[in-house]
Image (cartoon, rainbow, N blue to C red; front, side):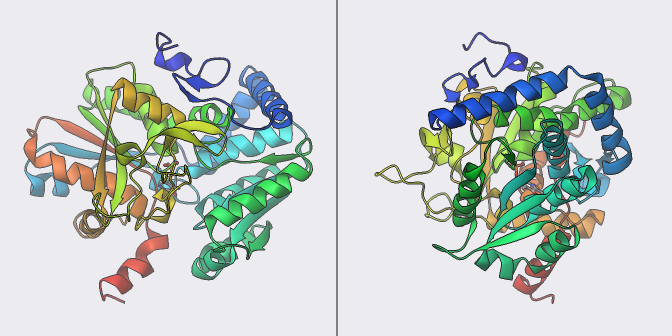
Length: 401
Ligand SMILES: *Cc1c(COP(=O)(O)O)cnc(C)c1O
């Protein structure tokens, strides 16, 4: 299996080396295989390809530009930092790329309802947006605690016409929302589809979501080649489940001269129990229908995780990242909450760009490494989303409110 070229992964059974697969009950495997087959069909279909390409252009606003963070680079006195501006997409992040793909697939398969969970509400808003556009009912399960915390996103989802199911069981947060959404899905998996929010879950989701996100790297490679006649020296992105990172990395995997770095949340420190650095400190196991690195206790239960960026606190990680770590093609490093906050403020004040706290992890890594490189070198940072959603929180934390 390991002799498969990166671009040919996963194999037929959905494995990236030993990771991925379908760790779900037999009847659900059948459903997943139908989704895979439908996906393979639409990939061959010109009508679908044309529709998705025109939505990327006219609806999302692609291609997203690459911006030279000149003042920041000058201050750091080392490598030049470039930002891939996924924050400029419609709805403000990369998530719309795969949500559009999933909503179109649902329509193609004649599904009657798209179901998903959401934590902070980012996946919910992107999915509700795509479903409104495509004209398919959307049901989002969300913990009651998160509903109260993430009011602006809840309001947006309601305006967009999706049904929100408040989840009050357990701790009434993300994990309980996943359980609730999954139970609803299992009531009628033939007519419903569960739209997974990252490159995680059973095959074919890690592959499908990656393919929809691969537009990021494809554009970036072309933009870099046109502008510099050269590829970047480093490419970096934050890793929660791993969708924005793999979308960016895919185009560069076959170019070993480009160093690829995924950045995980070290939270309050790797030596505390309040982080979410799955690839750095986890071990191979299974979670949510896939084999991947997991942060778990001795009994094999997923550990509670923490990050200042709610989009990054997940105890698992995509199977392809798990494979790429073992293989060594991608390096995984981590950044603390404090470094993330510093990068959030610095990019805001030096370049006038407020990054999402998730994306600020990748910015922080670039800030850490740039001074040790020479000014001819280039670091490409995937700026996965904008920070409007985080501005109130950070302002309160820093006494600016
Ligand atoms: C959800 C989110 C992430 C984390 O998800 P990945 O699948 O790891 O990309 C990162 N950045 C932003 C802006 C997000 O909304």
